[in-house]
Image (tube, rainbow, N blue to C red; front, side):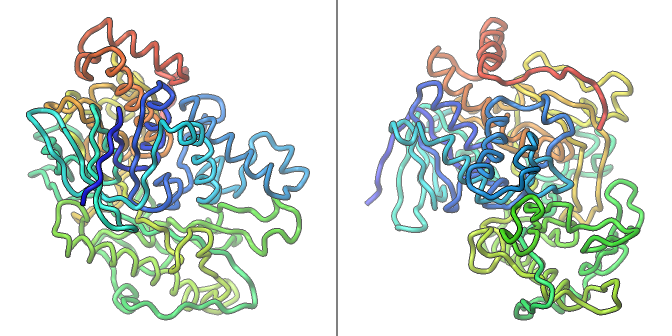
Length: 524
């Protein structure tokens, strides 16, 4: 027997954007049901184990007020719960891991605790219900509206039918789009379609999508042996080399992400070389009282274990599972290679003291609960952001194109990892950009909104609209938009296309701490 639940807003997907959307809608007094495929809300920040990728001005400006509250909450969590050194405790901008990729590298379970605390007031007063271990399986539509979404409970069994005036798709792959018949695109567009300099010269390729990565956390205990069982596909990955790669997949010789020149990195800090150990380090033990941690802890989301042998979107379930397992096998193989065969500066091979930190990611195999998805299905939107709108080589000294319907801002290079079409890195400098409301409005559906990286971008511009602060801003804006429409008895496309409504909605966003404009114009 199917259960039934109703709310003002249903959010399918409890990732970074989904959590921000739930927080926004609940703050506006709306009832919300949010589902999540795993047992950890937070997406990139938690179940996918990806420390925040952020721009260099993040401590001063360039994110929403609630995202800043999240960042402050992370620092406060360590100050309240962990024995920091006096120097670390006094550091206003504490970076727990001192990782290079972010000014706030931290453990996934810390992000989980902070997100749960931020949502707690609305969970406790009953306005927000969070359903974990739920997968969307079906949807019912009527004309240009979604009437219900059915989710399957993977832990307790059975299904629940969710109904609401508004549905937000915050899934990692845009799973609601095909279920609801919402028009969408996947993969790489052609230059004929978009005019983008880096788009495909020939036909579009809907199956050409960015690599996925199965992340993991590890530490290093010198003198101990934590070597895992040899992975099933180790020999395949040990010999595999893509045509665009300068060395074997299991190795530290890789193309530089901008110049594509062969570049040799080290695993551990080593004189004269750039190491990956500190790249996404989530715990720097020197920040804590002696004996708190036996080792630093680093998060491995490195280019050596990007998986591009096939997409996991719009393929059969059998093929999807095959590629998910392929990504898992690649990550385990890379870890085993580091333990057993990686060259060391002392002439030995392998670091057997490397240890998978299963407790850090909350799994039995030591890999993250979910694979890191860089590229989702993307709605066909009223407005699509193109390379020409934001890329520095296209814009000259003008800065990014200003959007009259801005609902937030973001900043990141147009960074695309190797793709399932066997294309190497694409990377371009961009200007700090805005998020146009038009990119959140489907061309037809009236009560479904994207709330993460499934907005109206292209394969290329997705590369800079997919990062943590931007996804948070997208989700938060979508949550406020659904609530605003309910309160004012209007629809999203009316808000965008009516000057008075748009100005009123933008005032609401500004009041709620959403920055709509950049105070600077410097390419990154």
